[in-house]
Length: 107
Length: 134
Image (tube, rainbow over all chains, first blue to last red):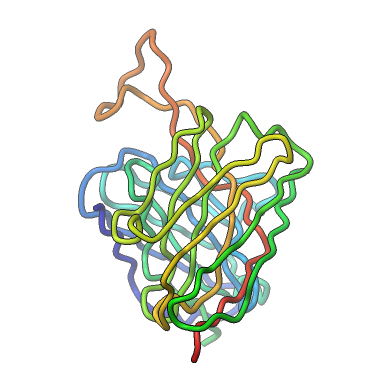
């Protein structure tokens, strides 16, 4: 099973600042990584797939990068709507696995 | 615009069977994979299993002995049954669609004449809260 590790667990950011979230896979997954945003009581929402491709309707301030085992989600100019928990997930192999999440909160 | 609507039993006693159904609308059922995922306080987001385009089913091995995922292609639906539930099965259960993306030759960054596909989860159901309590 591929283990996904996210860090930090919590990220405190001021409005308008950049937020950088990291995700590491325990073995190479190519670019087969997705990022999701989840707010309380809601289902996760797809932000990024193929490590760096934005899903339909996702603002350009969200960007993804990386390949192999190291990945990053960057939120430029953080807005209040972006306060949420973010998860990475690999779809390179079975079982599909998720990271434990990074909670983005206001500083 | 594809939508997933799910429903099922929300309150169970230990040893009972959890049963959920997910209906897909607004898209082609046969072109995608169909997943069940749960979110529990103890383990976070966990993939339970999926049905692929050929109707083959994969399960997470740690749940496989208690889980059955079944398609009903005539209704664009698929279902989840988890038997012998315990308090550890308490959480929110989601159905989700897997969408195809063309992929390099497995294990490489190269592209060849044969096409390979990976399936990423792009649409989620609204979630069903399941509580197991005596």
